Amino acid sequence: MRSELLQQLVATAQQVRSIEQQAFDAGMPVAALMEKAAVRVAQRIQILYPLTAYPRVGVLIGPGHNGGDALVVARELHLQGYQVRLHRPGSKLKDLPAAHAQYAKYLGIQEYDDLFPLRECEFLVDGLFGFGMTKTVRDPYAQAIAQVNQWPQPIASIDMPAGLHTDTGEPLKEAIRAARTFCLGVWKPAFFQDRALAYVGRAELIDIGLPEASFETVLGHPPALRLFTPNLGDMHLPLQRPQAAHKYQMGHLLLVCGSRQYTGAPILAGLGARHSGVGMLSMAVPQSLQLWLSAQIPEALVVGLPEDADTGAATADPNLLEKVGAGKYQAIAIGPGLTPNASNLVQEMLKSDRPMVVDADGLNVLAQLGSYQWLQARTAATILTPHPGEFKRLFPDLTDELERDRIIAAQKAAQTTGATIVLKGARTVTAYPNGQVFLNPHSTPALARGGSGDVLTGLLGGLVAHGVAQSKAIEPCVPTAVWWHALAGEKAASERTEMGVDAFTLTQYLLPAITNSE
Image (cartoon, rainbow, N blue to C red):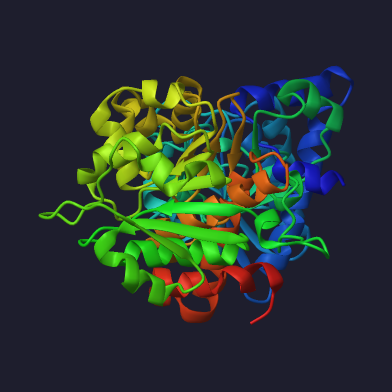
């Protein structure tokens, strides 16, 4: 139970300080926490970098407690037979690291004034700086970081790669490019900022025994920021069906998508919806695509929309909602392949009283409207799924915030509009209007392919429709769809490589991803 809780929590640098301070105020010695953390890191290093293959280890020592952690790791590895070489770029050490340095010298662990003897080691341990960095890394530390980043050996960082901003993931001039990072105690936001992924490498959380009560006191219950795992919501995958279920109990989704220019988008979105398990799927597309789409997705009820003769984009009239019978659907998803020429259609559909997922050109139309009033006026839930480019067009006033901290940017956008924001990326952020944020721990660059977002739109729309039909809260549907979509991408990439996962192939892995079947 404890490990499940810790795996979900995410704390800013200031929150981590408060959590640790509560433990210290309660009587835990700082030295005891350092010892426990470092010993556990050393144990993991022995598993991941076994002595037989990695006999020599170079350890970079910083001036603070992260340097103390590294010295304890060095001691433990030395006692297990590793040939340990220490290097301290700066001359200063706090009292506790200084004591560990003195003991390391007593044990005969060699410390070098020059960095280059560490070049001969099979791997390196980064103990320069831990969490809480906000200032630019200066020499001699910046010089040392730049040098070791050019070496081929893997680097294992303790808590945070030196030089990364704990909250934003920004490299502060120079930052260690770690192969692995052992995050101590609780996840920090940097591990889920896209720009930090090239620095943290493979990250894992090391439980160092901080009291659970402190987490709840500092982070709140429920915490505002956490990782998503399926057990956090009431979505049970695969979707559970009552024995006497009929199709309308499983939800009815209306997908509004497509144009003569983008004929594939409706198929991909429709296939995403198909695999969600939604009971009924209707699709509204330009009239010229109606028969063709019916042949591609035969179970869908396909409605033909008026279309612009020149562009092939769907158009609307004042009676469109009545014509498509919007009131009979549990949810509507709109956007993939529409083109920005479908502005009137998007505006008309936004007037519906159904929960709505808005993606792709639906978002571009909203950006053209230049006002959040369309969203704020809606009586039903709205879910926006922008990638960073669409986010900037939608929220130009948050562009700088997006560049600085995408988690905060998504949070502010949700609070401003009253919509749920799914900010797509390597670590997709789901932000709710009430300030709560879920981070998706799964990702693969295999999903960086055209059409992947269309699949997510259909999948998400189907889950929302199912949730409404089952009288369940729809909030868990959103991160569930994101999690499921990413999991399918990872499974597909593991079998087909990252180059072999096109959007159509992705749809074929949605069910295997959650059933562990082929």
